Image 1 (cartoon, rainbow, N blue to C red):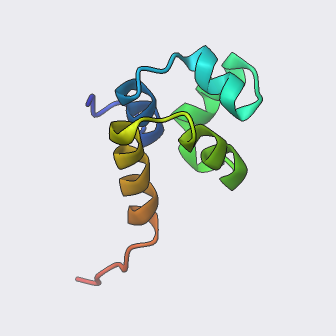
Image 2 (image 1 turned 60 degrees about the vertical axis):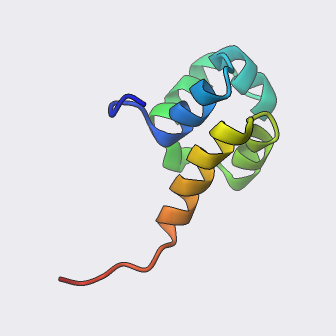
Length: 77
């Protein structure tokens, strides 16, 4: 996917969802969804859970990879 896209945007696109469909899934406006997608750490856990129920396997792979990466142990160099 495009390096300029957030992991949530990649997940949505991989699942062939429009921003309108994703916004509806999490119960927000399209403009608020777009703002969140550009700054994905602003999503609540509930919103990510709701969105995940609309994603296909490819989209879930992106979303899960990003979430798991947030909690992966960090190495000090």
